[in-house]
Image (cartoon, rainbow, N blue to C red):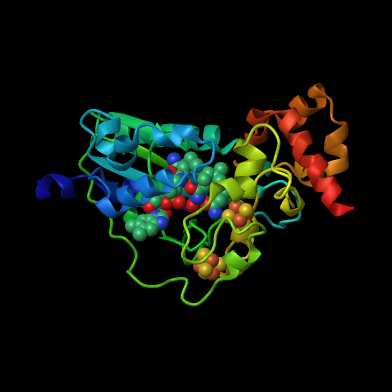
Length: 311
Ligand code: B12
Ligand code: SF4
Ligand code: SF4
């Protein structure tokens, strides 16, 4: 088995991933995550910290045992792209100022699979995962050594920071797994993300509370936003506060991926302009963006609260 593992050139796969524009690529096995993760997740759901995201209650076994997601799954190629913008000046979360990362990363992972099939093994079987597949992406990326999970719950790379989007290729190839980063307290005494969080969705010794998270409220939560939370909504779509506050992002490089299209037009858009958008304008501005799925009605709901809070 060891011989078989070593015979597959993982370096060429990682190099190809880099040439396709991924900033990080590393391998982990399809072994289940340890029981502490599963218990943590089940307790999180039992506490109702997932808000209305009931879809997180389904496929729990698959989320932590990636081998169940594909027959003969043997290894996972975990990737990340750096999306740190040049300036973080918008009330729309930075990731949503780019083209839709789901389609972008899926396309790149499919190109990586084509390369592996051609250059490494014709027998390749694979499954592409970006966000929507029930998979504990951060925990797996951590196990592959892409970074550590910070107190803000974000996968952070000590050199590249945490403006990172994740994607995975589950394969039937027995690739040699990489090691996690050295086990140490990367956050130390820092609490900057807790201080920056407007609602207390993240705080010391408490699980992540989606019910209070501005990202959840502005993107996932349908209907009215509770009156007591409204004065704290200082973003229109998503929220970058706990990422921007993190010292690991201070010196981190900005996104260098020219293929990952950034929209300066979306970045300049004000809440007042959003309130005046027609469905046609909205489609034109947000086509191929993560904002499109949320819809104009909800975007206007958020913009209205944002404007009220400014005045
Ligand atoms: C649901 C979801 C959300 C929800 C809930 C967020 C949350 N923290 O869970 C909402 C809508 C709020 C959200 C917001 C955001 N999200 Co989101 N989201 C997801 C999704 C689909 C599932 C995450 C999940 O399972 N959450 C459940 C909780 C319990 O899991 P967790 O916090 O990840 O905790 C795990 C580990 O940290 C660990 N763990 C945590 N605590 C402890 C304690 C112990 C003792 C142990 C053993 C383990 C442990 O175990 C847990 C289970 O694996 C993932 C994609 C995916 N399939 O993974 C993207 C994902 C996490 N989101 C992402 C992003 C970019 C964001 C935002 C930054 C977007 C924005 N700017 O608005 C914010 C950040 C909010 C934040 N601080 O987390 C990226 C994160 C990339 C990264 N570098 O980490 C992901 C991975 C999508 C992607 N493919 O890139 N998101
Ligand atoms: S995304 Fe915003 S509201 Fe949610 S935990 Fe981070 S800082 Fe708090
Ligand atoms: S802001 Fe500080 S505590 Fe929060 S994730 Fe970054 S280093 Fe850790």
